[in-house]
Amino acid sequence: MKLLRIVALSLLAMFLVACGSATKKSYLNEDGSSSIPPEKAYGYAVKELNKQQFESAVALLEIAVKQDDAGAEQFVNMGIAYSRTEQYEESLKYLTKALALAPGNADILNEIGLVYHEQGKFDLSRKQYVRALSSNPTHMNVNYNLGILCDLYKEDLDCAIKHYKQYLASSGVDDKQVKVWLKDLAKRKKRGNK
Image (cartoon, rainbow, N blue to C red; front, side):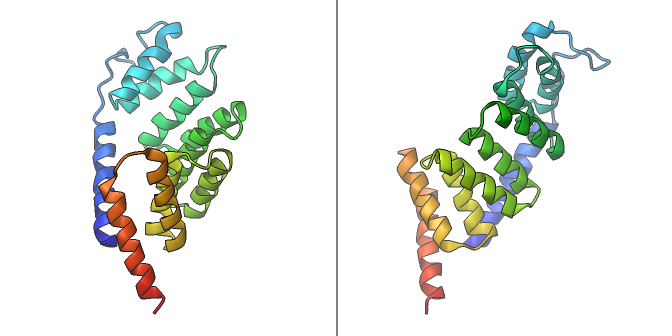
């Protein structure tokens, strides 16, 4: 069961990376410069992010973050775009700038945790998720991500159970997959206590 989840999550990650790398640069000139006025770059960048066109989003966000009114939102989106193009150090640079402007923001800490997770830095990832939960204990995505981290990568069954349950309570949805994972965790925990 654990192996199936790892395979499923790996396939999903590969699909998302493939989608992100097959970008079209609809807002860029042939030389890579923007054909968009600087004051409109951020709006177009968000459209590109929503279409999962991460490379063109990065190019537009580079223009947007140079504007005088660039704030945490622009830096977070830049961090997300760089993360989705597997440029993790650049991603962390912008996410850290965003966090400086919005200290303790659970969404930003969650994104930083995801970047560390992608790099295989699971202890650093966990640290960010825990920081995020200290400011927002019921944050749905953080609890879900920490549950996965504890379950698949840290083999901390109690942590996984706790955070999957909090995810279910916070989300308000009937997530059948997480319920299956919880049943599997209960069986694994029972076998480990014999």
